[in-house]
Image (cartoon, rainbow, N blue to C red; front, side, top):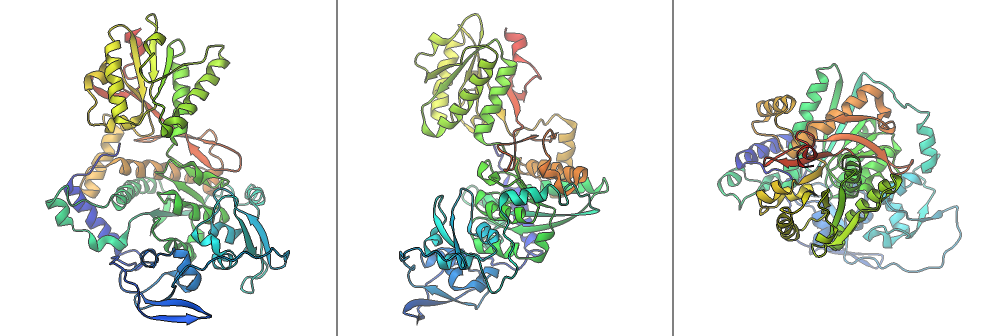
Length: 558
């Protein structure tokens, strides 16, 4: 679905990333192969390597060299939580400390027992109990390899460095937010962008190679997407500033490679003053940042990840890309509304990874049909037996929730043969547009439809204006990420301007239509965040991909 840049554009993006290095805090530029230190020392019977940090090394790379986790190093070197620098000496354990099993002692004056729930992190637990990640790890060495749901942890609840502890439970925080600073309108808003720029890797990027040696030399995908997103966001910010809105912008380089870097950024004094955080792109660092946003009453947006877990028990979070399950449920709503009298059939490939999509569509569709007094939809496993379920006096709407190119290609070829005897309309997945061997004739004959989270109508004047602005500003054509950056940033800034800092807790009934995606939000439960359920229904007409309704197929084929 994401269109690739030209290699000339790759060179332009490389130069932009290099420019961003100049305005970011000093970060390592290159991860050379980290070698184990030969210097050792023995402390309290334990052997440690004394590692001298070299230029370009990161905690992630060092931990990997010693077959440890970042947390293993942070436990022994708490100063590294604020970042590492050239020449710094780290004490690296020669082997992971083996957890010893001891009888539990009821000592609530020193710790409490906490059972880990889904979505919780060391950072969120440290904030919840007013302690530090290091102190939790000291009591729970098994947690160094990661938290698991159901794991029981000893949580220290007293600390000489922290006085007057205030422990907020989730329901308490939610209640407080209902009466504190909700909907506050400000004269200036602070916005942070958390993106995987991977500035540490800029020294390894050669713009000349990217241009001269395609496809051998490629621009790294994560930072390329981040820069494209940010370019679109800058145009959205410029649009809002022209309306009189004042926005201060911070940009942080955050990804899932170095958890110590994320913690360092959250410790920056300006971070608690943010009114809106957009990013990170992936769920792992987003969880930690979302916990911080929750504790500080800051709206936080997951802009390009479909994972729903980032919303769990966090009413200050929202995500703008619908999950695949949500996409199938919204497709069911569309078909139920627009295809009331058609014969609906779903073909299942039986693949395990597609099972959730099939169940989501089937359950939603059948619930809607039962409410209207109709029979359940027909279901078939593969092409065999399909013809027996087709009807000659109705439009046969066939839903195929499959991501397998080979399976889809073979199925469409067989359906094309049946199209001479039956009226057929196929609903598939937008990922099909990435398949390189789908016959255009099949797609036209079968009137293929998609429920797509992203679709750009290049004929619209607003789209053409954006492309003109983008080219003038950045010297290339916008990509899917560029459009996403513009749409998400513009929508969120408009909500800040409209409703103030509390906009994210009042998105019920709020809708929007961007250049690439629609916005309409819902909650899975009252304590969690909002998911965007806005989709665009598109279809093949005259060998072109157009919005549903531009040339309604039911008008000509019934």
